[in-house]
Image 1 (cartoon, rainbow, N blue to C red):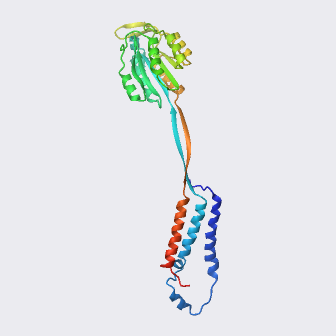
Image 2 (cartoon, rainbow, N blue to C red):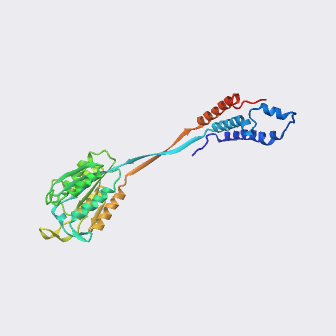
Image 3 (cartoon, rainbow, N blue to C red):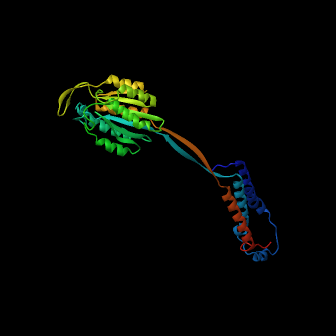
Length: 324
């Protein structure tokens, strides 16, 4: 845009226009008969009307530019400063023996629960922006697979390496949540979240799940709990059909105590929808601040006007010198 700070000064541009009108349409009609005019013409170096009036063109244009300069033309544009308030998210994943149960389907094939979890969680991580992601693995015991980081590819690669039983065959839900809270408590982020996924019941570990939930509440950490798998019997390779025990009640209590939310996924589609919903609930807060930047341009018009006046002085004394 090219707005003017004092647009009313543009009225002054009519002055050089009026002078042009006077010279062309009024004064040109006033003729003076002069004897021996042909001899006078020979004394003039330039008889072409444009050349004879070129000095006036310089002055008229200079006046026009000065009028524009007084109106203070400005170049304006908008600058946007974006800042984000990220969320710290710890993904706590169960890798106990029961996560090898084959009651899920993926791409028309029967696969283990952990296989589906790895694919869905990878998609969840890829969709993040401005949030730090960490990964805690638990089974019979718990350990940190990845600290909080913005390097999503790093976390995804580590998650792809998860294996059944890598943290033991038991299920220490309390220890898994407790370690997640320990890692996220070191964060200075205003928003902290743990997404805990399991298919069993707490049967190992030192920290009871309800005690871990109380700690999360004190720390202001929201815990989303996901119970995965069908209830009842399911086939586990190397073991056969076993009775699975998913403690939905404890997962509900953990989520309720921490202002989180409980979910139960019995198939691949449901699990994907759960993580998509959590992603919507835990959106990064993005703030945009707009600034209007101005650049004054009047100096360019003044400089050009002065240049034309200078040229008029030079040419009038030399190239455009007239006989009066």
